[in-house]
Image: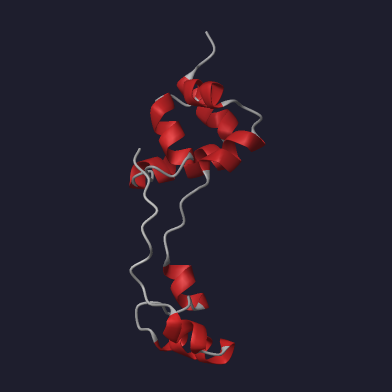
Length: 111
């Protein structure tokens, strides 16, 4: 990977000259950077945190992937934020989080 030490292309002098209150007002005036209201937050899709679910179950990535039949690379991509689960995977993670025993038994029935 190539790294450079080029100076930034931004002129920070205007920003540096602003007071904290002016910076805050400018940020609030930016239509592309509005804070989340409780209503907007409630409408957002929440992605289950697979790492939290996995750790709560006390499983390694390998064990979690095998138990719930998720490709290990996919699980790692989700946990490391390289990819987000699609709608079906999000639903599956919700079910795993709420009832991991039932999912495991459904996937690995006792003989």
